Image (cartoon, rainbow, N blue to C red; front, side, top):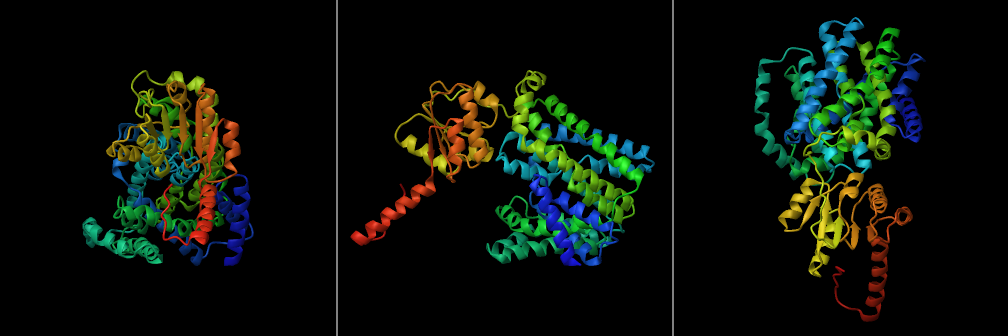
Length: 520
């Protein structure tokens, strides 16, 4: 039976991936199709899916940083949006015959947006450090905290009197960090993460609380430490593999009744309203139209937490299992809608810009971009290792150079090193439209994401920049797109490194020289 599950999950996951949709849509579909043949969930599949949920919540806990939500636009827009959307969806649920408490739970769950989908989309576009990405992640963290409350209230069972001891868990943070650090960077570190996720869940379960809440709390104990991101990356593949069981199990419950399907269709029809509400709330909290639009596109979906917290609520008897299957259909359909929207958000913005920009408030906006480079002759876009090296080289030759970066942490680090670095989102048309590049002789694009480099080059040429554009690229097939966009030179460091290695090899044979360290 297990091989059949894996085969169906792979076939349907691959099929929807070819349509540029998230594979989990295929897993749900595979489960639903098998349910028509009388195949039902088993205990082993349930355990696999449950572990996937624990690993997911553990990794969410690893990224819980409360400072990410301590911004007016995050707490204001995100909080008000959750209240309004939750009230609307609760009203819809109540109109379909659900009682008050189940309606409130369902309404709250439908107010969430997908954390996984948003993170993947922002990473694919190379925008994780952008201002709109930080607002999006902040709102998602705010929603995750509300999801924690739902998990705590609907986890089922009565908390043990000993559960009060869990309040002392933060005091264990130094010990847990030492254990993870002592595990090194090998499979022992991965094993320590698995033990913490499962152990945290088991501990909370023994105390009469939700195991999902325990896994999340275990991850939160490591949040903010340098090992958290590394541990999250190591757990990524395992989490994704085990989550297949969760989505597959939901699908095996089959299609819900006609009333639930009607409810799902209505909720799906309300997704544009959820999106428009995000946009205007963000505009109200003084964001620029583009940032508001990009956040809206990122958050225009229903969430995997809708299913996870819904499953916990169903297990606790607060809502029916039938509605959880309906929530699964809603979530999967929203992913289908969201995927092309986020993939093409920049091009869609270009078409809507003239209509949406007049809607923004006439005030100083959070995330306001630079309009002057202060007489710089060279602009380095992307202040990572390569960009910093280019900056220092130009500075050493007494050239007037300014760096540009989208990630605030990198800007702060460079400013501490006495480098002149300004904030700028290279994919934002308004940046290049308003930025004075008349005195800039050359722009160096030291950005990792290919799409960002091509988009930035295209925009600079569109808004009249005539100077040199030099781009760093790691793949030989990228240079054609950059050349067509208007780049004047492309640097292929790996190819140049290969040539240098060949030269060194020939020199060694001829001269048998001593050890050489090449930094050119």
